[in-house]
Image 1 (cartoon, protein in one colour):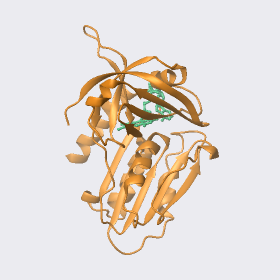
Image 2 (cartoon, protein in one colour):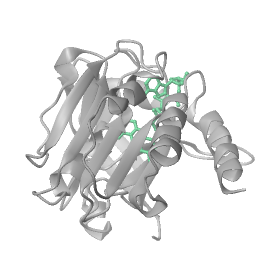
Image 3 (cartoon, helix red, strand yellow):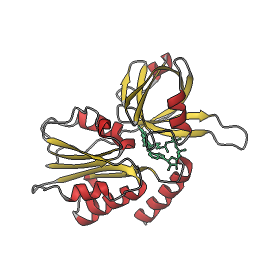
Length: 250
Ligand SMILES: Cc1cc2nc3c(=O)[nH]c(=O)nc-3n(C[C@H](O)[C@H](O)[C@H](O)COP(=O)(O)OP(=O)(O)OC[C@H]3O[C@@H](n4cnc5c(N)ncnc54)[C@H](O)[C@@H]3O)c2cc1C
């Protein structure tokens, strides 16, 4: 999908839960943005590149798109900002400018599977929410969602047959077994399984090993991605992510 730059402004800023902050970006530029991109992603351009210096960018999910506005949810890092993106979100004021580049494609759950195993931490809550909203209303499965505070359990319009299990971990990234341990406890019916997981790198590796290697979710029905890595900023995480992808495809 061709990506372009869009100059937008902050139209709304509000805390939706103790560890999640929402920013609404708006602008006529979005009239040229591809439509129907809920769950897709884009880059926030926090500092433009200059000679010999790359732009400072961070990746976020389009939680909800309207004709000339995008809602974006920023997971705070243990309740506060830890990097330039989360700092910007917490300090943004109405009318502040922000340039974005995008969109990148959404990764929806595959259709027509018998049972869905979904897992993610707060960084993936926007993508999982968008996916669950769009899933066939007859879908069955479980979504295990790691949050930092019990009040981070935001409303999600999931199909009735997809149970939401919330796991509270006030130390994001420090307990990488939590999500996979929760998935292991789920009783799976016979039939075609689908797996979708996005979260911190170490937790993602454990989920991938379980979904792909242990219970054999078919590649076509499986999506796993690390959205961040404990102790690394996004630029450093991307290097580790690329190396991991090379090992997986070797
Ligand atoms: C496709 C995709 C979509 C994403 N969508 C979203 C989204 O919609 N909402 C969202 O909140 N995040 C999302 N992320 C994750 C987000 O890009 C990273 O969390 C990013 O590193 C945050 O940037 P930062 O500038 O705040 O921190 P950075 O400068 O990148 O990192 C600073 C420090 O914070 C730590 N850190 C980074 N992220 C987290 C976290 N989530 N929890 C705890 N500590 C953290 C790092 O390990 C590092 O030590 C997405 C990532 C990808 C790949």
